[in-house]
Image (cartoon, rainbow, N blue to C red; front, side, top):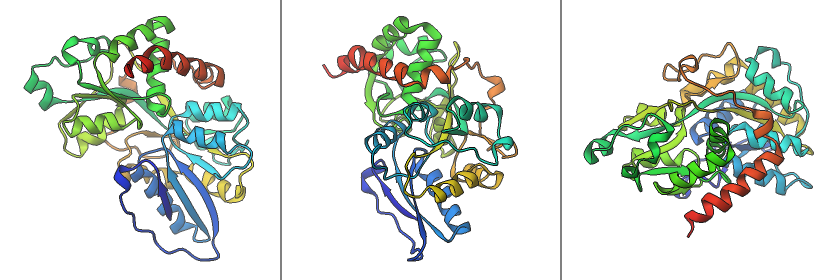
Length: 342
């Protein structure tokens, strides 16, 4: 695996195993956590020795921007993981290719619906619910009340304690933005986010960064997907995971083949393999606490039980559309992000 990354900490050095000089190549963007990306690519190369994978890790928003910028001359063959909304937008813009895998019948309905919504230009590979994780040590030390609802995050006592990503670069944060709009209405959600901004210490680039900061004691609370917060808890950090009482949205992490890819056959091989039970059963081994899309895959014991969460009826078709996504991001920039920069 040749691994290039623009989004892991401080340019950490990575060992690059040797690959056959005559191997075919696959150029891949991975928008999940680095450990999951490495696990999948390493296993794929081990079972497909004739294909060498060149991988770059980018957040969902960054990945979409890269695919769009390369639209006339694609340098990427396949995009795996990250929230599905930007992949739906890429599909609507013709940036991704139609492909119906032989494994579609093995997938949960929500994964197949993602494919149908996109005209089979993307497909669901996992799902995860939105929430937050807070540092119990910090909250206890400062005498802060446990936040169990979205409304609790507006408590003035939380000023400077919250981190959330920028929805322009982060699919996690865009899911939060779209979730609040669906819960409250657009005007009310923007008003809420402006008020929340008074308590936000930093809008990060990466969606999982806020809860990692909370785990390190650099923030009190991070608004993230629940599985990212659970990952910090499993690693031993004093992070408590919360699903908001009013209801919450969720992602359908997706996978797409790029239209005009230089290596479409290799992309299809990875695409088909990534939907199998064997491939998806590797995810928990890498600390993935999402629900996998293959119905026969076995989730981690730490994965949240969706039946116990108050999930909204998230409208992926609408909030994954180019028109809606662009309009919401423009309004967030003008009313929330712009104020944060003042």
